[in-house]
Image (cartoon, rainbow, N blue to C red; front, side, top):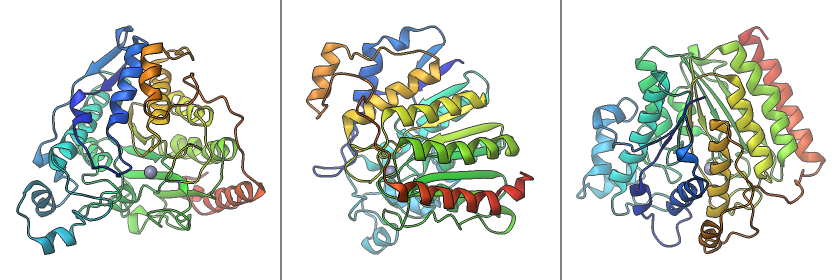
Length: 371
Ligand SMILES: [Zn+2]
């Protein structure tokens, strides 16, 4: 499968501020890692520089007033409050508008390249900012690039399935398409009973024409590779096979990792990579986006492995020494690309929870698809 990696060093010039968990340096570390393995020199692999999104593209999903408030420096404080801008998780850091337009432009670029058939898969590691609502910044996200990319694909008449494996519920995307059957959204995440944003219950199924087209599989804290991937296998492949999308858009957040400081799941690169291999095996044009992930060296390693799988290239486990030294400055322990600690599989509660939720989906969602 031909593969594109959408990247510019400009991703890492933006800074959410000291103490904020979102570190754009993780994007550069991932690129550097792939570059150290010379992956961009492989046949069929393209490195593509993105352009910022245009305003007419982002307002396919967001309100124009909200985007203007994000752009302008002198926005009224009551409006900022209404739009969730400048508070807690969503500071108005220098270049916040440019950053958001650039990461969204990269997702649009990925969508266009995949949709045209130029490549089979395109990966924008700066994207996947799935919490932004049509009129509100939320959870480190200002412009919802997955939703904008989906709108671009819908305008081209494509049928889209969105699959989100971030530790957090993909709320902005789900609620953006909650009333339509034109987009199937599936989110696997740590239960909202224990983690931001609090939504994503298995009972959220969509409304009106969209009923049955929003699917949520929440997991109990502590869930590890085997249970998470088991749940994925029970739900995602049958729905994709039945829905028959023209394009899949995946949000590949890696805050599911055991080492992540924000969420409470226990995945390793092994479980994560098994899901990336499943996505590849669907053999459907594939827009791959990044997402959460707050242990920066784990993020760089996981997404490098993911891109290797997308390209069909087995990347050696030993990290080239220059790159390793750099990663060590960002807290990397160990010397290999893959995690080799024994997978932590959680207690029986994690499996019971997953089994109950999978059963609910099979009973309440699968009938919409005749499965
Ligand atoms: Zn997340």
